[in-house]
Every structure is written in C-alpha cells, then in structure tokens.
Image (cartoon, rainbow, N blue to C red; front, side, top):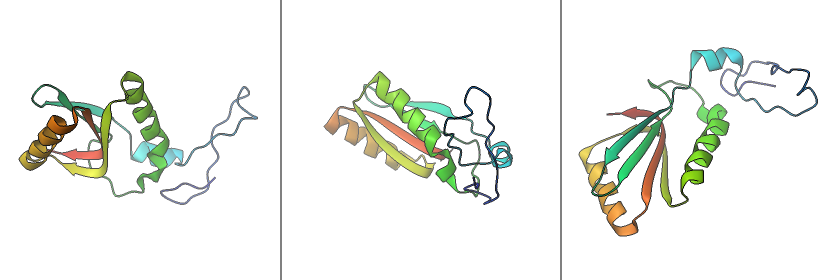
Amino acid sequence: MYCVNCHEKFYPLRRFLDFFQTKKSYLCFRCRSRFPLRPELHRISLLEDDLLIVSLFEKPYRMNTDGYLSELSKIMAFFFKKSDEFLIFFSERWTLTDLWLEIFQWLWETERKRILIITFYLRK
C-alpha cells in the first residue's frame, strides 16, 4: 500500500489470526507517529444544552488528513450510538469566536438538536 501523506510504500502489520482479512490502512507507521491523534472533547454551554467540539490534534499539521477518515467515522458512530439528534459540522481548522457561539446558540434555539463540531485543530 502507499501512504496517503508521504506516498511511500508500506506494508500493514498482519498477524496469524487476521492474515487472510483485508486490512485497510492509509497512513504508514512513520506518519502515524509524526502526526499523533489526540482527540479532546470540549463542552461549551449554550442556553440549555452543550455545544460539543471534538478536536483531533493538539497543534495544526501540514498534512493530508484523508488518512484519518476511518477514525472520523468511528467518532461519529460513537456519538450516533448515544443519540441520533445531532447537527454535525466538520472543518479541518476551527476558530472559536463569539460570533460562532451566537450563531450556534441561535441554531440550537431553532432546531432543538445537539450540535457537534468535529475538527482536526481547534484554535481558541
């Protein structure tokens, strides 16, 4: 397989029990160690509910983020198991400002659904 980020050829690690299964890996081991995934959940209170923000990296990286799509789908599946009443926003980088908080507060008042933002890097 070829790494999505550095385009080098790599072989995913296989064990005896999963030798004949297809294993999808988009990032090589070196890129996974250079760009570690550290998800954080931030809760910001609106009027009656919380605004949930999941940031995946501690600092911004210049990389192709398509290699982490399987992790994004796992995060979204986790939140949908809890409740399917979410409005989801996705952005690579997010800057949290007072204007965005007012927009999300208005959106919550009109829709009455929980708001989830998934971003790779959150700048406060």
